[in-house]
Amino acid sequence: MVPIGVPVEHVIALAVALFVIGVLGVLLRKSVIVMLMSVELMLNAANLLFVVFAERWGVARGQTISFFVMAVAAAEAAVGLAILIGVFRTHNTTDVDELRDLLEQS
Amino acid sequence: MNISDALAGMPQILPMIAVIVGGLVTMLMAVARSHKDPEHGQLTAGPFVAVALVSLVFALFLLTQIEPQAKAVWGGTLAIDRLSLVGQGLIVVIAALAISMGAASITTQGIVRGEYFALSLFCVSGMMLMVAATELLTFFVGLEIMSLAVYVLVGFRRSDRRSQEAALKYFLSGAFASAFFLFGAAMVFGATGTTAYAGISTSAQKLLSGTAFPMQTLLLVGATLCVVGFAFKIAAVPFHMWAPDAYQGAPTMVTGFMAVTVKAAAFMAFLRFVLLALGDGSTRHVPWIVDVLSLLAIVTMTLGNLSAVLQRNVKRMLAYSSIAHAGYLLVGMVGALERGEPAVQGLVFYLFVYGLATLGAFGVLIALERKNGRHDEMLINRFAGVGFQHPALGVAFAVFMFALSGIPPTAGFTGKVLLFGPALDAGHIGLVIVAVLNSVVSVYYYLSIVVYMFMKNPPPRQSTEPRVFSPWLTGALVVTTFGVLIVGMMPQRWIDMFAKLV
Image (cartoon, rainbow over the protein chains, first blue to last red):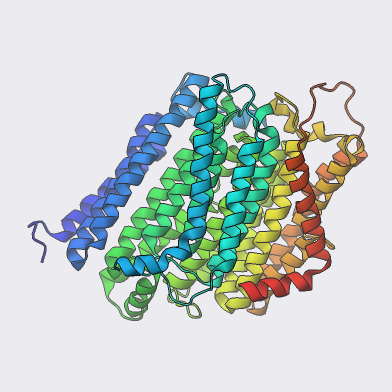
């Protein structure tokens, strides 16, 4: 049923692995740029899952969704980088651990 | 779906289109203004507020003209049932009040850009889509339209360190949560072959009654990840860490806006997902979802309230209070799962009351902010004696605090009765007892601000910068104050109205 010649299970395993790498990246890394890349990785893992399941069920909906997700991911990256530039201008750092103004103040 | 279906569905999305058009007009106005006045020095909020209010009021009018339908429109992606119409109306009303309040501080708080109004309106259109969505992708797109606009709004004070920090933290955790939701949605799609709630519900019933091992697990893991995504957006413990920072760092007018509308939209979408995708309205395919939600409710209420007690910054305290309210609303959701229709009415009624009271409280904070105010002006001891200097604001703030803690005769009391009642009926006595005890704890920190305002002497040296007043803000405060009182004193009329609507 799957014309790509790769077993569905393998693709699912790849998607889950990408997602876990993304989660770990967001949780463990301190540079905001790497965290942003990790979020993109998570979104793309979801995309891969949508596409492979669309193949499996033989419906086009999964493929369509992946296009929407790409557009959303692009918008998210644009907004994220703009916010990051704002942070860099005011704090001179892209390290999340150094952003502590809100905690110290209260 | 085909072209004629799309045309037939057009009137149902006109309210959203009206809001988007309003957003586009304000965006163009902002550009035109920046041509004339490159310094942005003298931006007057009046025309922007007027356009925004006209589009919101028009959207509300259109919403009242739509007949509720049992069947989802747009190829099964949008529900035009009463919950959807009332939910959209609620968001539009609250957003109109919030935007009026923001007009006062747009020039004084260094937010001299008309894009504020455009972003707020786009955000509202995303929320309306979220509330109506009966399909995972539609919900996701609405969620992102809302979230991306709110991230930018939180960071709207470009030169302010705290505002930027808050925006980044909110963005990172929000994007993280969206990715969780999306991955969960992909798994649900994989298990059921569809993303429409109705289809998911039928497949789930089949899958979960049988013992189809891989698919069943896929569905449950996917649904759990989706619930995690929702829990992030409503700021339920343990997914709440973004809320205090985002609420505190954001400009006060944005905090008021997001504390109410984001929570209301996410909650109604969550309710729809749990009721329609993981059940079919009256039955539940996943029996333990009630236990999960009860646990989430207990942890959220308790941690939210206990943390709020410790705060010295009023904005941060209100952030924890909104976390606690997410817990109360989850109690209502447990009731809605057990009792259906009347409990949903109670939930929407409480969202309305919570919205009025929270927005009003932030409105008072906006009115008390000084021009180019420093951040420590939100510390609780700065509120000493304010009740004597500004009696009207002090009394209004006290009314909102009474409402949030659920003391009669304010609407907060009626709201809590309607919210907790169904859960009690369904036998969740322990849960309701925890909720009521939590309300008692919350009285401590709500009233401590009132005590500072009316029972302490003002500090000897005070900033001489004028406070912010504007007719828009005054009007919105009058509406919220009397709203809370009138709904509280004549509850039956309003309950009947909501019963008819929802």
